[in-house]
Image 1 (cartoon, rainbow, N blue to C red):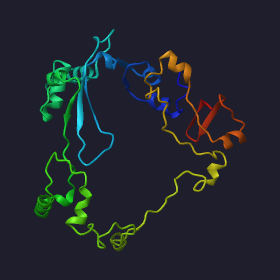
Image 2 (tube, rainbow, N blue to C red):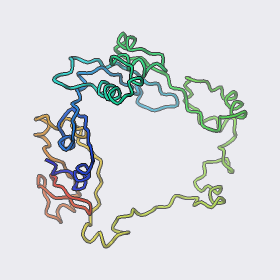
Image 3 (cartoon, rainbow, N blue to C red):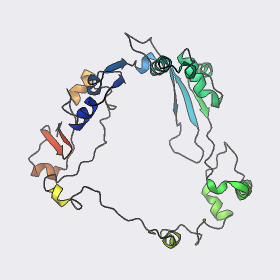
Image 4 (spheres, rainbow, N blue to C red):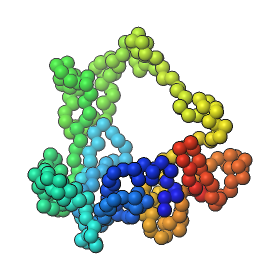
Length: 280
């Protein structure tokens, strides 16, 4: 049931006085919960999505707000995230902070600073583009900042793709003692800091812990994901599970050869904190 979790993970969850899990699937974590609140899928709830419509992230990047409307009503006893949060708030005596009677009302409240309503989004299925003001850093604050903004003619919601040229045209260089980009900033050195970045060995590595490396000689890099899964989502879909029923391990071919590991082998990955089985 939890063979692919670290040993400390389930032990820590079992020590909790009370564990509530909200999920679409009965995951290993949900199986350890005192209460499981079934959440509905994205096809069963109305929500809005904001994303960047541009490939390149320039000086002034607008966002597109799109309404994702539910296709069907929530099945069985599942609820949307909005309803779960609101009903919990009311049961805990905070009903005044959760006055919304529908997902649409909650969306209207969230988007009110932008002056957009759920009905407007529904009337524009392609979405509504919201301009984003440029980031004006601290050097633009105060009296002198207003002067610089006036010189550069920076206005809110204005696209200024060559903003960096201000250093050449008006300031005659960067705001450093040398007026240049300083790889070796002497100002930091005068303040007692190292002027250059210094490599710091990790707390546990073959160099800093050679004693540990005798038993655990390899370095594990975690975080890469299989594109068909999102954390625990989609793992109960049979066609996807047939492709990758278990976690996948990628290893250097030379290291694999030394350890007699071949494609498709089941290997055990171990560390001082736990161990689990994966496919090599």
